[in-house]
Amino acid sequence: MSKPDTPFPRLKLTVENVYGHCYHGYKKGDELILEDFTHPPKYFCLGLAHVLFPVIYALSFGAKFPFRDNQRSLLVTCPDGGKLEFKAEIFEKDSDKIQNIPKDPNHKGPKPKKMVIEIVKAKGKCHFGYKMGDKWETTGLKCIPGFCGAAFHTAFPALFALNFGAKFSFMDNPDSIDTVTCPDGGNIIMKVTRVEEDKK
Image 1 (cartoon, rainbow, N blue to C red):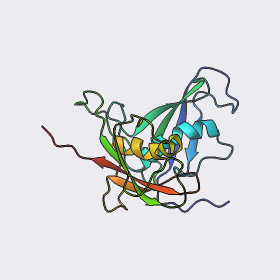
Image 2: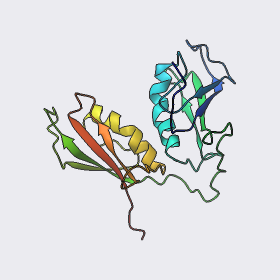
Image 3: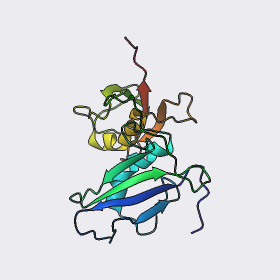
């Protein structure tokens, strides 16, 4: 397979800590390079990919983590017993330099954003009965009571990214993404939007 032609920056994973046996043999200090958020290295651990995807998706669209020494990085833990801890970072576009934004000195703790999930396309049968125009609100990364688990799983990367300031520049409203698709036949497509709340 040839090197992907991608508009997105490369990412780097560094093994920060090892707390148990890793079946992939990752060791402290190992570095893994991803060509972009959709192109992991060969033989990449899919368990790690599962928990990592929201983070690298968010980084790829400009998210910042103000509590980190470098706001453009985040730690991710192996889902198999927490055996490893990885640091995810993103390169400057077309560069070998890691993006670095120093920690926000004014950061005072979490500031979860208001989000809206809306059904923008519907076809076939949805077992939850969702239809065009249905909307739900949530704050930050809170689950929506009674919401379809498969749909929420699909929407979570967008919720995570938007909660930390990501922008989707190709959208009419860059504070939203409208291609979040149900994995069950693609019957439902959702739009996830970060809503600016009035400052009191």
